[in-house]
Length: 324
Image 1: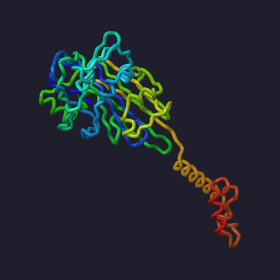
Image 2: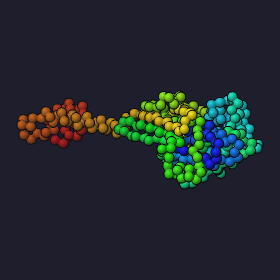
Image 3: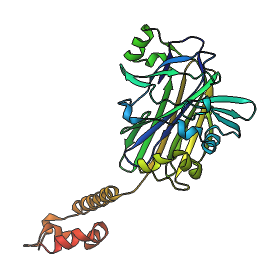
Image 4: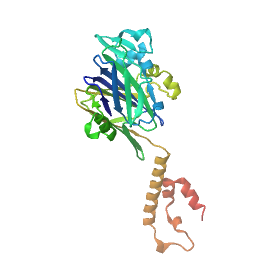
């Protein structure tokens, strides 16, 4: 992932990345950018993010975040006051958080465009907005954005590899944008969240960057999703998901790597176990056959002790004895 901007003296104070590994074939990734724009009236940004296909799969989360209850949930802070810019919620909302922290949450509808493989954000900023603005959007995809899944016979493993502004991984699209005057933005703090089913174990996570592993607040998160939950048929129940929170700050680039796994026993695993048991039993039995002493007219399988059939597979023993 890369964040670039044409204007100078602009920085990302906080970057939020949140992945949802919801059970099923739908994958969601949230991106939230808290930007110090100084007094610039306009920002021209270019974002290189994975699984970027079309605008239909991108949803602005302004209405979700600007709600007072959801705002408190997302920023984990009490809210002193929320006022709409120009008295109209369509222009954005100025939010006063505790400890004198103020941000202006702005909508992105009409300011997004996919061009040359990048998400272009050409944002006109209202005059009443403060110097710190916040935008948040959701990307839906059929394949995960930052993870790789490996399915074994009895184990499923998910590896997350989130990299931000890592120059050695820059794509051709990023290099082309830099030649057109876009500059990689500095990021003061980066927050990475992974929402995963509670049936998965945490095999590895960088302990230096790890902050918490906790159960997902299903009530707050369901409220935050709003109509997204019904539109995407998402069901979040209590104790069903965990959230892994990592944080790193004051770096020129960021990376977060973690591994999660789940062991399971299904029909395939049972079939493998029965087949292996049967083959092993037959190998032991055939090794003990005395073909020279086989009575005339008797089949070889009739020389195998009955107990081996009983312990290997009752179905096969029934089938073989009824052949003679």
